[in-house]
Amino acid sequence: MFKKIFIYLKNFDWILFTSVILLTCFGLIEIYSISLGRDVSELVIFKRQVFFVVIGVILVFVFSFLDHQFFKDYANWLYFLGIILLTSVLFFGTTYSHATRWLDLGYFSFQPVEIAKIIIIIFLAKLFSSKKIEKDNWRQLVWSGSLILIPFLLVLGQPDLGSAILFFVIWLTLVVVSGFNKKYLVIIFLLGVVAFAGMWNFYFVDYQKQRILTFINPSESSLDHRHNVDQSIIAVGAGGLTGSGVGFGSQSQLKFLPEVENDFIFAVIAEELGFMGVSLLLIFFSLFFYRCLVNLKKINNDFGIFLILGSVGLIFTQMFINIGMNMGIFPVIGLPLPFVSYGGSALISMFVLVGIIQNIIIKSKINY
Image 1 (spheres, one colour):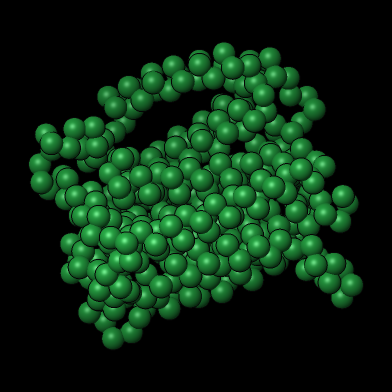
Image 2 (cartoon, helix red, strand yellow):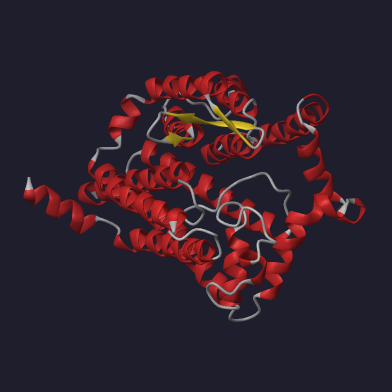
């Protein structure tokens, strides 16, 4: 038993783990800073995030010891579990800010969509690693797309456009790396344009349309509609080289910037830690992605390779869109910054994913 633990810890990718911890520390520092400006004597949000981090770190090691082949064996059952969870939100979920995304279990609430992201990665990794997949078989491509369409539509019903987009990105990432004929990618793009047009006319509500219109033509939008993005851009630009210092960001501390602990935490980092702080943040993200990808050459099973690539696609896209939202180059669609933004469901699910990735890496080193 102890020998197995020693072997696992010896082959544990400590650099990858350290990059995640450093990213989490960025979040804790800024959440602490944000809490200082609140009218409460206790740092409630900060303490909650510390609790989530502790639980997440424990889960990294738990899942790093749990054989990832287990998830492959039960991928189909996990898919149905994900569908059940996403469906239950629509009937029993708690509504907050016009969105029904949480299941309240009394002592705590969570967002099933965060669990569903991991499940979709596992399910698609098994599907695309199957020897039955033929790269020129459009029926198989349509079949895989239809299986993702179900959770995609369920998440749109919450509504949660950002997470729905991530489901599509995970699927598209694995389609690309699977080597399907490039002509299919052109068809997918054209279908995406048609789908967007249909959603604009029949799905998007007024505030979602306004966010997109504000992004496309900010000069024609009212000050109210541009307020969030404008304040975020001001915060990013105000940081300069070294920033104003933790706890001294005018945009965040004076509450000009909304959702500072979630959607716009990157703007807080840029304002208080400046260009140097942002550079460190991006270096830690780059280190995480590098360690994930550099280990691929040692992995001898397609399921593990697709699972890591799907995870990298999810985390990179979420990071890229969140930073783009903060800088005004993407519309605001409510995606947190991975490992950094406040939120138990999102943070813990990211740590679980890191644990699964670690198990794949450990197994590959042992069997290499």
